[in-house]
Image 1: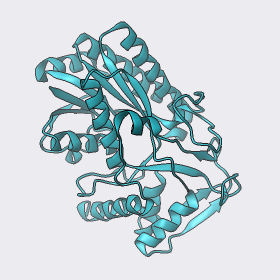
Image 2: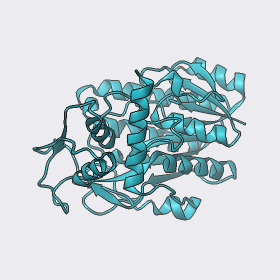
Image 3: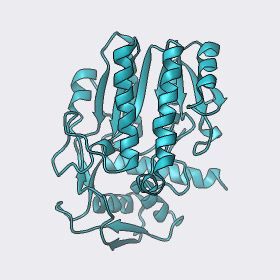
Length: 328
């Protein structure tokens, strides 16, 4: 069995490659390096440059390497950018996924795992969401991901391929062994931004909105360590291989932290009183986005090992320091 990881040179995809390689799996990475880094690809994987939406290329890779499963991470992920440039997101996310699924079906791929997003829920309210919560994405990014979920469900109903969807909440942190992490220089992830400010790579950060109906007035999010998220992928792959049914699950801790809590945690971990300017709300930001993650725990036996904000921040901060040395 060979697993194809699209976007395997990116933040989350590179961690999936590490997990699979550590387990002795044969791994092929398909990445065009638009946002990924070739140095982030573990040396035990086979790297094939190209676009995940190139049907002919993917078909050739399936035949060449005997690919039986696909884990699909490739895509664009910045919500504000999707509002300004929606066609980019419907192209890079929806259309690319559609072509990749076509190639998978034609090549006889047995299982397909897709990285989706909490953005499919839209304005969730203050209560944690569950998989049955109504779907109402507010951005082209969220809609582009939901369309792919729909395509997978339709294709699985018509063909023998089974699929798993994981809806991510706020992924953060880095590999404990410092083999990979969030490496995009100007990424918009809150924890990364705060760490970069603490390290002097940015002058300041902004807190968008302090008047939400949350305990301290700032937005609350469910931050999940990337290593725990990838462990969920590995369990989902095992589930499908064992004959399990196609499924969709939230990947979250059922524990929300506010923006102010994150900033204070970065200050404590770094020992730096970083500058965080408070300003007005940003359009489209929900007050709170958290999920129970109960289905993942009960059906797959997922037991998080890194569900502590201090550990998440410490690993992210250590990775940023590592990058500063690496990029000198």
